[in-house]
Length: 120
Image: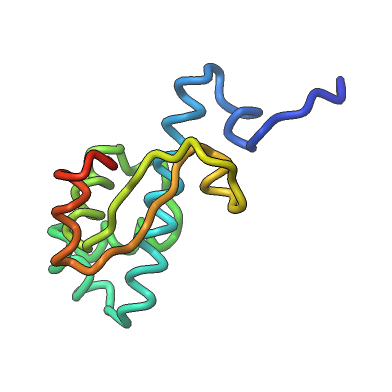
């Protein structure tokens, strides 16, 4: 080992900075969706109905199958759940924020503000 240090595991294992950023965003969205589903007490079937996907897709999400999800799909699912993804350039205190992305859960009635407020 050469002792090289990385800001995140994605920086270490991906070939380019763009690929690392893509994985950081996808993992942040997946973690936020998983936490939201658990917090709501939804079954996988209920979550699928609410998020516009099938139960097997929710199962893949809950098992962390990141390679099966693109950013577009995750954004669509997050929007359906009332989750707002916002880019952050502030000093970070969480792993997600250090990765440059914070994902916040807002009430479904507030989710439209993500799009009008310029935070997505």
